[in-house]
Length: 98
Image (cartoon, rainbow, N blue to C red; front, side, top):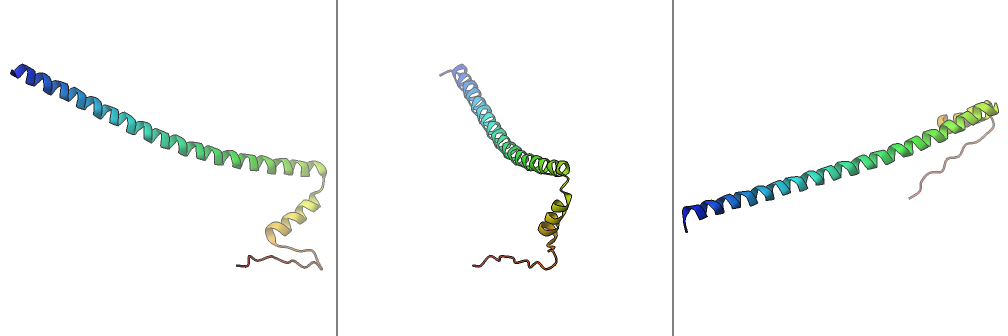
């Protein structure tokens, strides 16, 4: 074998190695992009749920404004958020028994 054949083998080996390294790089980048896309999709889904909940609350508040029933709303908020009770009313809470 001549030196020309040896040089040709080294060059073709370098080309193959370069192609393999480039392919590995591309696959790694594709995988990392896919992970990022999946994370963004999960975040988008969570934000969509929050939007739906907020829109439902907005609709409820608009209906309340239009119905002129603020006293019932204030009473409900006082009970649910602040634990208030009407005079003479007893409030019971259920505890989780294990």
